[in-house]
Length: 336
Length: 284
Picture 1 (cartoon, chains in turn yellow, orange):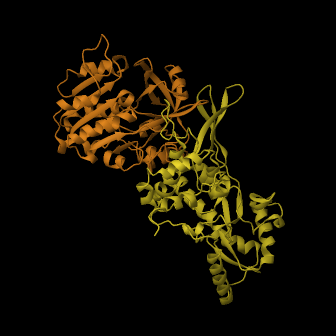
Picture 2: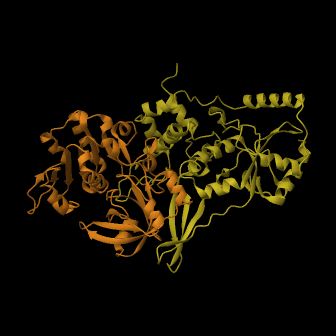
Picture 3: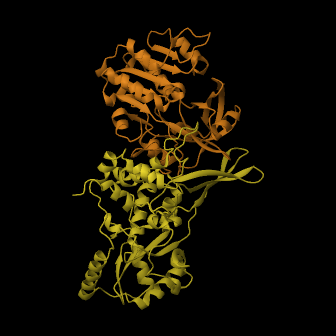
């Protein structure tokens, strides 16, 4: 697809869908509504928040209730047709990791409705200094999108992974068949991408076993002493799905809404039970649990780690704790 | 209830079903026994559970709390919940009257392996409020008593006034088909039973280790000591079952609050055998 055709595609999609994508906000980028194709910043680095906000909003009403009769009055599940345009491979991979949780056993109807009504258009990227997706193989994405655009300079190498994606291309934009030259250029661009990561990939060797073997290692106390328990890492993480559920009463106390809100295992009361016992009262135990779950707990269920190496947590953390730092600390001692 | 049955009944696993409180009994100063009946008939008839499973109880405007079921699965149509007044939701539940409506979701989690335990001896140990989930298993074994060998129940409490279901267990002391021993940390003038921790009672037990299943429910600190006693009796690690209390908010493996090691107590537990539990970091 010729790059000059891109606005046609965006405008076409806008007739049927709300189009959201990376737009500028100050010096940074965020996923926001794209009113005009020109505002779409497809050469963006990484957005502040991941696109999970479109599937699990920061606060989401699950149902409304009558407190007087103690019954549910409505539990409507709605989702608007939407296209997220310009997702990087890490964020598409992250959504597939979220799918394992929300679309597996006990399917979550709120998540599913939004997932079903949302199309994903991916775009290739250039790694920045925080990216370590190459550690987990999440620098590539082979499915899970509707359309994926690989940037070849003046044109896009287009991958289509759904019938809907193929239909939209047919309807809204002129494309042509791939030539051998296109493939050669795609290979060249891919090689350049693989070579342009700033630092050596994270050393993931035997990580799950190390997490167990070093469960009582002082490294966790050092990390715990630094951690502010602010939860920023979870909020910006495209794969952190934990939530809290709260009942909000109206002013008269008669009716209300049950709302789920983003939560974080970094918060001190996260694992506290009713009569006050806290299973993870220290920040060291919470930092450890977060990494233990992401790199081992989730892996034990779904054969993937719960991290896509987007680097958002590294940017957000005020005390420079990140998967790279934690894994490096765990690997220490085995160096030659 | 199987996941499939649940899905058929409810397109929304977060939406509680209305249930009516049909009876409330004061057990101690802080615990009440609630009997609930799901109002919708089709939901009620599909509501099947295993001893050791739990439900989420809703008081709208306050929230939800996970509570283990105390009655036996064989008691159709009603479930009993033994509830300590310990948090916002349980405190609101304690204010409720007979006939009031509460929200109910579940049952959730993995219970005790009842079928597997049949044809074996059972050694059941509860401390404090731990009797709440274990009571379901005890009652279920009671209802199908002929399928089990020797059944031994050890109950511990801080003091006599905190013994839950004391009237029933006082009567059971004289039964021949249950070996029941109760012990308290601090006796009072009404107490003529044992004094000390439940672990003290193991000295007098004659356990056939190959042929016995153990089940333990109690405060977190109790598990290690009781497990040590059972291991001392040469019981197999995968014949010892424990039930974990965690903050199970959603009940369906999503919200993350009940994480224990690499598992979630709500879907992978709350009942684990000791082999599993010893491989869960920070579990015991």
